[in-house]
Length: 189
Image 1 (cartoon, rainbow, N blue to C red):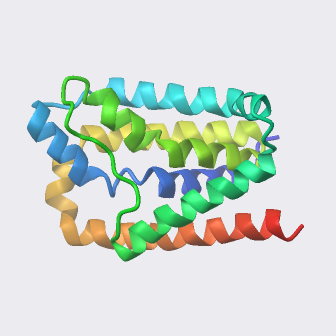
Image 2: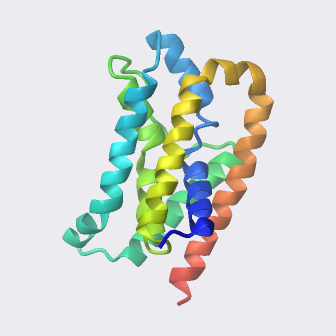
Image 3: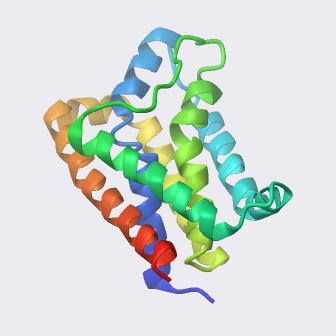
């Protein structure tokens, strides 16, 4: 049931998609505009979204007549484009960060942390990995997200923009590789 290799794989995949380290500049900007970021509220809201989608996502797909393989390929496409964004520095997806009254939920928890890419990835992962291993991977990422949200100003000083750029590129390559693996798994069965 519990498989350390799967938990590690899922955790790294979600870490790449959530890209909380790459989002630190956005978090810092939100903190400056809103005055503060409610780390607990943002982490709990994004965790609730991810866990609900983990358990109810397939039911929602069945409602629309979509099989998990097709959704996995669609998720692979989203991961591919997110990876391209990270590696090439171009932007396909944009979030509206103007409404600061609920900045801990929108845009921080959704769509920044638990956005379309993350939710699609969770469903895609269900086609490959066991649900308990995915759940542990989600929880590990939520702990890391909370830690980053709490220490974003310290991280800003220590890592700097050059360090964040390197991290984004490395995890972008990993994400592109995972997307290709999903394509190979479902397109060439």
